[in-house]
Amino acid sequence: MDARSDAVERFLAATAPDHTSTQDEMADLADDWGFPIIGPEAGAVLRLLARLTDAGRVFEFGSGFGYSATWFLRGGADAVICTEFDEEEAKRGVQFAADGGYADRVTFEVGDAMETIARYDGPFDVALIDHQKHRYADAYRTVLPKVRTGGVIVADNVTRGPIEFANLVAHFEEGAPLPDAEIDAETRGIGEYVGTVRSDDAVETAVLPVGSGIAVSTKVI
Ligand SMILES: C[S@@+](CC[C@H](N)C(=O)[O-])C[C@H]1O[C@@H](n2cnc3c(N)ncnc32)[C@H](O)[C@@H]1O
Image 1: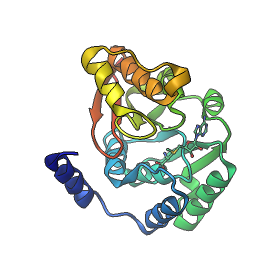
Image 2: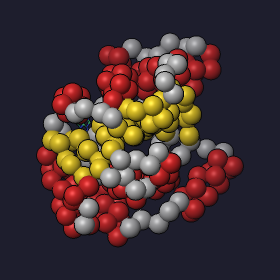
Image 3: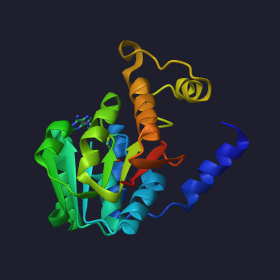
Image 4: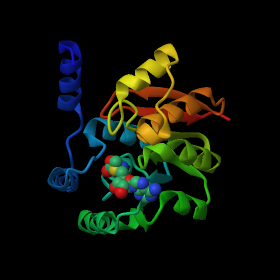
């Protein structure tokens, strides 16, 4: 990382909102477990999006113990549907919600997020995609009809995570092929996701280099 990028990252970290006490405990648990939470820089954007969309209902693909959900709640969302296939993580999420006094605003659905979304009707104001990277585009296509016009779909890890970012840069700059799914399904999944939202007239997309990089798509039709 060059000196300016490093300074910008430090500036974003230093100016991100403070954690609540519950979020502090979640961040400690994430450190203990080596678990990838979205972090306060991207969390601030989730909070902003909830506020700007006057969010009622939010759907998350891949919630862990509910850290990202707390940012939507801080932005005034009425209800967040959390999905998680790891029972222990979901159990911790339910406990955090009870201890933090927001249990009436979050629901933890244990199981495959793709099966859970099939059981839910829209409309949602916001959806967060943060589960298996090779399934991002599928999640987008499934949730889009359930997001209201003017609503937002956010995808995490578009610039950092279990991906080879240099391969994505080469793909979008020079048209280099994405890696085969058998070789690197995560990088391919993120590349396909960004390509999908960029070419879909139903949404307008901005990639924001906060946290691990988020793609924010507003539904316009
Ligand atoms: C990056 S973490 C989510 C972090 C969370 N959004 C946050 O910022 O606090 C991804 C989570 O998605 C879960 N996951 C991955 N694929 C899933 C799927 N198909 N259905 C449900 N959960 C899934 C993983 O077990 C993991 O806990």
